[in-house]
Image 1 (tube, rainbow, N blue to C red):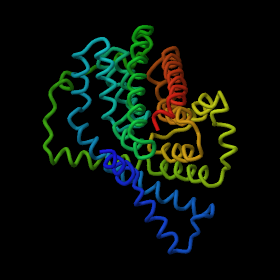
Image 2: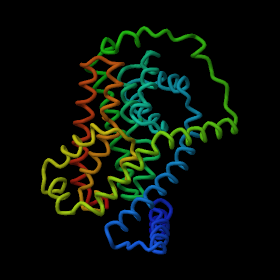
Image 3: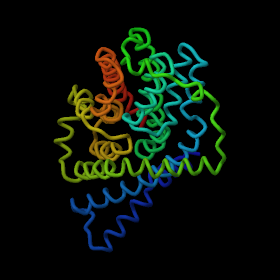
Length: 337
């Protein structure tokens, strides 16, 4: 069983065969893989092809599943539950929406205007960019199944706890008035026509093209940064800033990640390069979560929907949660490897 899991992790998810193939082609073209330039080229082409291939397959599968949960149906499902169940269901629904943080906000506005409790909508908003099903598979390709599973669990826990705190200490008055006054037409609540399998495949394929077009340049930038870190920046320098000897490495990683805008697919190459340089698991997770959940563009967009007090509460809860998760992963990281 262990051999099968190792094969899946290394050859199917990690695509080590692809890395070997890229290296062989580069050597045929005269590249020295032991040099900085040759190593950078191998890292760049391997990670780019791997992420785009896995991304396309995952987005197709996730979008096919998502076709069973259009926004109106999701609203009806969420409206049936209360308390912790509602936060948990909302967080789980977020895992089947392959969106970045900015793309999740229109759905958040739709849920809020439909009258769903604030905590429920914020549980969705936290989990949607942070812990989609694709993150489970892609993180497994780098860090292994155990770490990827732990990441998804703590992300869901953060979404549930964050939503419950916001629901307890905030109110509908913190939503901008134009959203609260949106008139939901009766026909919008009507049952949507059932999609055929052909419709679902067409929808899934359209989502693949749309998502790849949206994140393609972020992936290239992320892979480029990863190649730079992996082959050009000395390990001693990286560890002096982000290593375990710096007690503020987790906070620093989260702060550096927040102004950036990307989804988990764009941050993975950077995370992989930092991991290979010996940076702690929690520091890497804090960086990834900061980029995906609290990017500056998403905060600007969210401000149009909520008032400053609620925006500040959301930012404080998620950032504190990310930092705590980072230190937790640094502590338990050796046991997850």
